[in-house]
Structures are given as structure tokens and as C-alpha cells.
Length: 107
Image 1 (cartoon, rainbow, N blue to C red):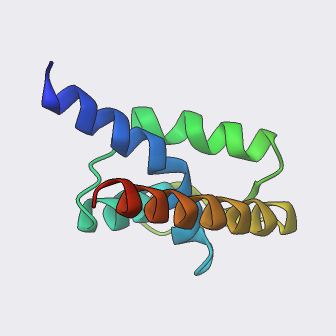
Image 2 (cartoon, rainbow, N blue to C red):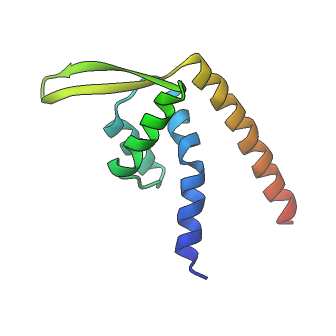
């Protein structure tokens, strides 16, 4: 079994939670989200991020606004909706339960 495949699947499983956690601190545009994920050693490319942001927007978890940029095309800034804040709280609860369960089973 290839450990790298398993590690990649684990990272994909928490990616949505990580993105929403970043946005709970305020709005951000995709490059900022990618930079924050890289700092946490979650390497994500735009081709992965944009479809996920679109799916979250369509589910009314996120909203966005356009802002003109002095160094290129307008930027799309994403932020959590009220529904997104509630969704993130549920994910946090689930994450904490999983961490607890893993700690118990690994003893």
C-alpha cells in the first residue's frame, strides 16, 4: 500500500474544514487561502481550490464580492455566510470527536 496516497486522502478530507477555518477570520481571495494552506503544509493548487469554493458558494456556505485590483484583473473575495458559520461549527465538533476517537484507539 502506498503511504503517500493515504496521506493525500487524509489531507483532502480536511481541506474543506481548513478553508472554512481560514475564512472565519475574515474574507480572503483564493491566492491568500492557498498561501495560508501552504503555511500549514497543505499544498493545494488553484485547480483544486476553485471548484471547492464554487461548490461551497452554491451551497450558500460562502459568498463573494468583486474588488478592483491595481495589479491586474478584479479579485473575488470569499467570506462565510451565516449558514457557513453554522456549518463550520458542525465541522469543528466533528473534527474534535474524530481527534478524540483517534487518541482513544491509538493507546
